[in-house]
Length: 465
Image (cartoon, rainbow, N blue to C red; front, side, top):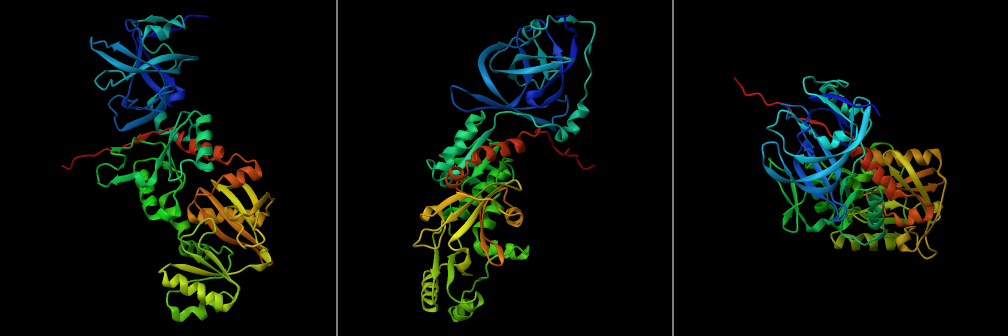
């Protein structure tokens, strides 16, 4: 292999860190290479730690920030060029100079006061039999900082993510699957109990606290918010959004889907077909309410219900009055909805992710119930949906603002009817029925969103004259 000819300063790139161009000083007097890093934060298990850090790749431009993640391979005592000794995290990553690319070890250190944001030591040069000409510079390909202006159009950079899984049921099937899928892809995922979180609301810093301390920055958040804590849970999700974390479903989208009245109003606004639905407060309107949906049999639903709970079938007018009066006496908000008899106790669950239907199953209610929820003893089998059903499922999720959703559709004599949209669909039934890796696809979607180069250009503040 020919020697690599270098000047005392060269342009380098580190593709896996998402750093397409940075100037490095070539220093054969230094054993270890060093990269300028700030806000250095470790995470992950002790036996496989990772480190997240920020880089200012352009000298005198602290408004340009690149956020990187890498595996920690060591922590060493390093003596800097000014004679000071410090403990530094060591990472391994490929470096590219000219047409050569090879892995090197790099220590992370704050080099704000140094002329160059990177120092390339002799250990990194030995593998390429490098020859340094100290009187010359830029002997290899010249790059440029303009690349940071177009980074969002570049291919995404793979790196380990730090993911928060917001849940109150840490041991259920869906959460276990998300953890398995994330860890299989070398990400770190941490379960956080939603009700243990509390938030510090101020204009300077948006923090989420848990168990007496501020939580670290998370790249992504998977909210599994129970219906009983929707208001508090969405407030916590909103706070995570304010920290800059990517949430698979936003707080607004979750709230839209959880409020069945609002959800049906959004469906109607966007001309989505659905069973006739009515809502009223006064007990004087009960007869008209029943008539609006075509009379009994009819379905009465609590506004905030999931898994078939709080959903009652009233088969005649007397039972309809009884159920409606009982809900009113309990100060419960509810909907009255047309019963679709020709659905024959079946519905279709469509899993929608990023505007695509990725799995579908037909659910059938048990013989003694009209609800097809698997939690109520229903059965399921894989089903092929029509183009119209697919279009409805995708449009419904989009109108709710949900990137990940379970959309329930009834097949009726009039065509497909949208029943409801779920912002936290369970994975067990649909994965076991269809064999689809829903959890893995969700993690891959998060990766595709957060692997995009994390360049942030802060607005320059100019003092008034």
